[in-house]
Structure formats: structure tokens, C-alpha cells
Image 1 (cartoon, one colour):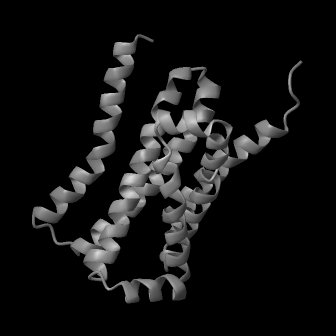
Image 2: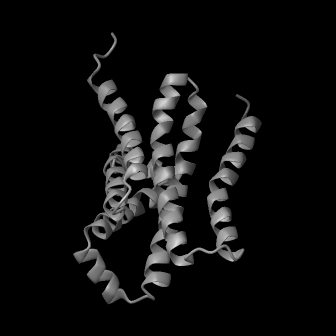
Amino acid sequence: MKPRTITYLKVAVFIACLLPLARAAYIVFSGIQVNPIEFITRSTGTWTLVMLLLSLSITPLRRLTKFNELIRFRRMLGLFAFFYVVLHFITYIWLDQSLDLAAVLKDIIKRPFITVGFAAFVLLIPLAATSTDAMLRRLKRNWGKLHKLVYLIAPLAVLHYIWLVKKDLTQPLIYAGVLAVLLGIRIWWRWQPRKG
């Protein structure tokens, strides 16, 4: 595929990743009857999880379709996952908790769904901080080891969602099922005998 085509695709993916934020802003500011804090918190949390799962889907899709250029989109999707989780966290500590750090700390300690969500957020920070080509060169093999944290972060994010929802678990269980497939494929491939 030509470099220019890849560039156009990257721009299209970038814009598509911003659409959920634009939609949320439109709903909040258009006067539609929603609780804005709750809506933004749920929306940014959901799209964090979506971006995480999309980034994890790149390798299986690349191997199944032989479309190797897909790998060029994984970093962008991972960074958008971090972007949405930062918005999610800011909404929680600023709009929901009014920057009351003592209340936030109490929530983190006493409410398990916040504990695992906060853990996932903290673990995402070093992945975002080392997402540049310069850090890739500097860390070398350790870069790959560090970024395997995503295999812990994604289950924590799904668990956060499952524990958050008190009644209808349909949607979080769908995400859990998608994650199980994505991780299961990797485990199956790992156990396959090497050719040659």
C-alpha cells in the first residue's frame, strides 16, 4: 500500500477516534436530558475500553488477513485509549469529586470497582509515556516486555466495568467475551508448534 494511502487512512482513523468525544459534547451541550457528569464518565470509560480492545485486535487481524499495514494503527489506538481514560479520570476527580483528593483516595481504597479502574489507569501511564519511536529505541527488548502490561490492563478495565454495573451485565459481558477471544487467540498461537 502506498505511503500516501496509509497517511489518508491514519487521518481517517484519527478523526473516527474523535467522533465519540464530539458526540458526547453535542449531547451534553445540546440540552438533551442527561446527567452530564454521569454521561461523560460512562462515555469516556466505554470508549477507553473500546480503544483498548481495538488495539488488541490489530495483531490477530493482521495475522488473519495478512494485511501487515494494520500494525501502523495500533499505537494510535493505544494512545486514544489513554486519551479517553485521562478524560474519564479527570471527569471523576474534578466534576464528580470536586478535586477532593481525600474523597478520591477513600473511594479507591473502599470501592473495588474504582480500585481496579485506578490500577488500570496507572498501568496505562508508562505505556503512553513510552509510545514514541525514541523510547522504543532506548528500551529495545524491554519495550516489548513493558507493553505486555496491556494484557493485565484490559482485564482490569473489563472487571472495572462489570463491577460498576449493578443490574444488566449484558454489555460488560460482551466486552469480556471479546477480550477472552482476543487473549485466547494469542494463547492458542503461542502453544502451536513452530514451523521448521
